[in-house]
Each structure stands twice: as C-alpha cells, then as structure tokens.
Length: 103
Image 1: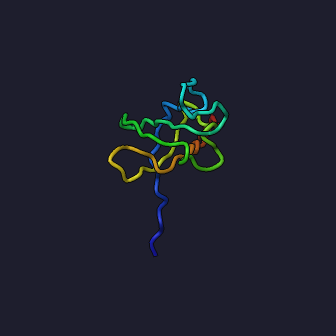
Image 2: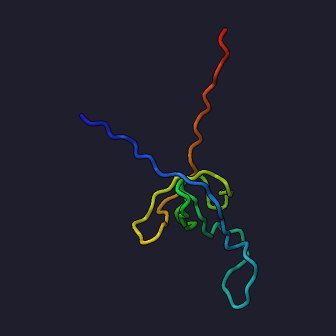
Image 3: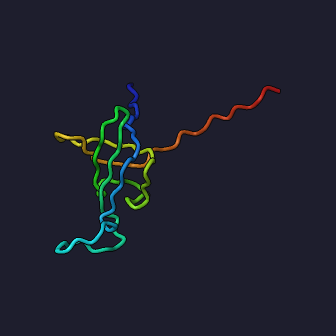
C-alpha cells in the first residue's frame, strides 16, 4: 500500500500589496473609495521571480486586507504564459526547536 505524500507548495515573500480602495481618485473612473478587499499582490519566489496574484485567490481565514508586506505565503501556479498564482495562503510558521542545557 502506497502512502500519499503531502505535496509541498512553493513559498515566497510578499513584496507588494495594492488595495484598489486606497488608490488616489482619478476622474471618470468607477473606483469607489471604500474598505473592500479588492486588489492584487506580488510574491517573490526563491529564485527572485515575481508571481502575480489577484485578491480573489487568497484562501482561508486571512482575507486580502490582512496580508502584509514581508509575510511568507504559500501558492500554487496557474497554467498560464506568465507567473500567476491560482491560490495563495499564509505559510504556516515552523515551530521553534527548544534546546535545553544539559543538566
């Protein structure tokens, strides 16, 4: 019987978050200044490449508004000609190993 190994998602650092509700007003546009979870972000992967994601692909209890620059994110890529994330979630922190002095 084969065991299914959990697939490790790539991780990267959030380097840019753009909230459309916080953009400055431009005449003749339909953007309404409001707190509304809409926008996009860019993740830098381990190779230094930039991965784009839309507010619509953020998963779990964190909303797009909860994301902060510098956070570690896990993502999966869409099958597209450029680097675009199909899903994004905040990476789980690795528990610290406690080292105790010898008695």
